[in-house]
Amino acid sequence: MKSDRAAAFQNFARHFANAISTVSLYSSGHHQVSRQCSLTLSDLEEALGGQQELSVVIIDNQMVVEGMPLEESLPVSRLSQTLTARGIGHIKVLRGVTLDEILTVAGSLSKQNSRGEVCSTAHIRFGKVAVRFSHDGCGTAAIDPPREDQGADCQVDRGKYCDVYEGIRKHKRLRVAGIMEIVSAFIATVKSEADPLLALAPLRSNDEYTFTHCANICILSLAQAMALGIDGPLLHDIGIAAMLHDVGKFLVPEEVLNKSGPLDEKEWQLVKQHPLMGAHYLLDTPGVPHLAVITAFEHHMRYDFSGYPEVPGHWQQNLCSQMTTVSDFFDALRTKRPYRGAMDMTKISGIMLEIAGTELHPLLARNFLKIMDSFAKTP
Ligand SMILES: [Fe+2]
Ligand SMILES: [Fe+2]
Image (cartoon, rainbow, N blue to C red; front, side, top):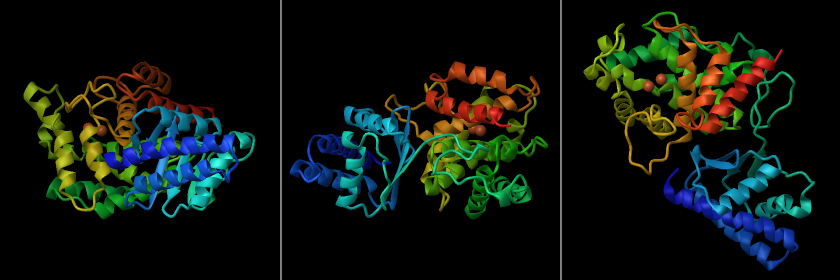
């Protein structure tokens, strides 16, 4: 999200929070109410920019707009507290919002309606963030319930995605349409599976490592995003970004990448170039979402910036990169390595909780473990 749209969203948060409290004090026909709602509407139009829709997720009182955590401010935390108190964790705004709709939602979020339902309008949709994929039928409106016709049989054509990845390795050319097809199939798989872990592909050989790993990261990141109530084009872009996060590895010499022993300093420096090389490669590939370029560049940075590449102090990591880091970390621990066996869930949870807040985004790490935990409890 560009900084001018982020600034417009900050203004939106301020005016919308004011509109809600003004409706609580006066009647909805009061001129102060219409003034605050008009300001809210013009900020919202500016925040939309040229887009058709805007997706906002609230995680532990932090607002994430179009995948980017919003800088904390008093109006933003006031608004996120109001929404959280009403059980709202996800808002989707579609182009075409009217002043009447702003007045309606401000009224339904006001103190006068503290016990009533917060209803969505034609262009402003509210959703609750909850971990879905459960068998008990409860959950959010943002994610489709498991469908009978897509049970465990819904498999992605493994040969097809092998071909797409072979194309990058051999010809250094990416078939974007192929990646999009794979991601759509994964979205359907994750939506239909009771447990996203069941959709993870087993590693058959070393050669298959990179694309098997990328497919797994894609599935795990989609599961994280869906559990946060993200759907539609943003979910698709997150899937593509996760699927392509390690594309730079195809540009690292194979003998270095597949070396069985420890890497020397020069080789390690080459491997550490893969985020930058991947980002450059994707930037030069038409049709790749910008989110994929960012994620390829940022996925080894870590929440506390202890990873690589090094970036200036004011850098703000994209939420998708941080979700990819969480998935990447989990996949590394659950995969058998020459020097250790695959770890069990209890051990992995312990390690992830230990580094939540340092290497991993604390809220995303907890969200991830909550998803895993809900499956452990599912009969
Ligand atoms: Fe990587
Ligand atoms: Fe990776």
